[in-house]
Length: 120
Image (cartoon, rainbow, N blue to C red; front, side, top):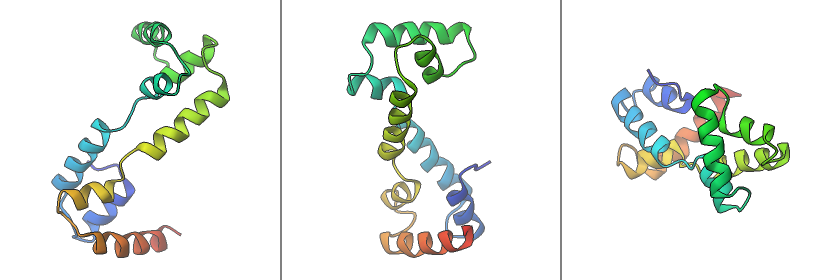
């Protein structure tokens, strides 16, 4: 089942099928940087700290960022900044569908306008 609102919108309009959206979402997930990766590239954490957090996750249900803050490796602000950066770098579903040639760039622009109107 598709849990992305824009993906659901496209399926409900008959623009693309569920399989295409699921494939695009899979691509999106595979190409989204993890908080650990971003923390390393932004020099917020060392490799040793990342490994400590990952080892802690093995026995804890907590998320990477929660553990990093609890251990004092990141501040709440650092974590928030990394979340924002992750969102900025995440490939957009619509752009992925254009790259997959499921929709055109022109269709994407008009569909985004329509989607935003319906969500308002």
